[in-house]
Image (cartoon, rainbow, N blue to C red; front, top):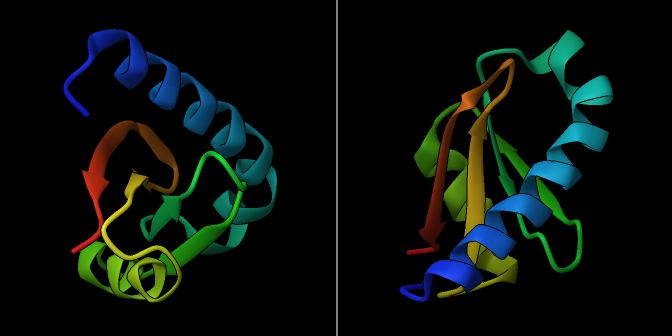
Length: 82
């Protein structure tokens, strides 16, 4: 994801999904990682980045997802599943 406009659009869409999910996720999963597939709204929880990635990879191999530390929305990372 090297095109700056595409990257910004991807991040904006993922942040909107997180804003919807955080009401449900933050009270019970603070500190965990959520991997978000912005196009579908699907999300995958894990205790670690690797846990969330493994769950996401099962459905979305080699696709870009947006990883967020729940409760710390500034701790984000767009990554391709591996």
